Length: 250
Image (spheres, rainbow, N blue to C red):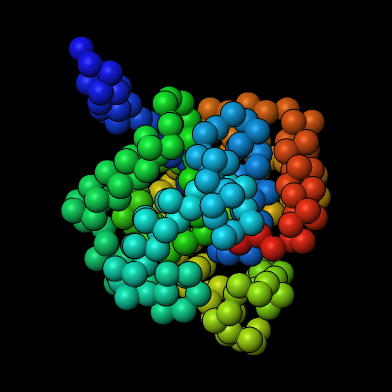
């Protein structure tokens, strides 16, 4: 058997046996990086490290290939803003995306990306604020996936949107408030549909040292982490934010 054949067989075996991703979602400016850092230090693959230098974004946990070729494509396909800031998908759009054709495309595209990034085995996660806007097609593609929904107080998200230079769609609290409310509609749909597969983590609680929700979410995903390890993971995110002057995308 040639080396090419062995590689092809290995890729097919991985594709057939790949577990569903753990989806880390929430609105932009909700602190997704903090929660993703904990899952990263829990040993989960995310494929972003080797791509980060080629990314225009300052997050260690956004996989640029998934962002550009999956998330942006899904939003663009619904004539929306690829940055997830304006012209957001409606409930009707999300219902229309809940179909086998779209789910098959997403799954094949995603698997193709991570295989090229040398994923081999084990749990993995996708951190993407935009995924909640098109959650129906993700859910159809991976019906057994666990979802970590990161929540942050509305007023804090709005303030962060006004502060971040890449959040360009609005210049007023009212504009970002309406944008946030659309995300909440998506969250409510997800909570109703996903049931025990969605785990809500309040950012303020985590940053205050209350890890009850976070540890419960980790446990339901089959990950056990001690309080010191969680604290260490969160501290590393704070260091990176200082190093990058806080300009993180998610």
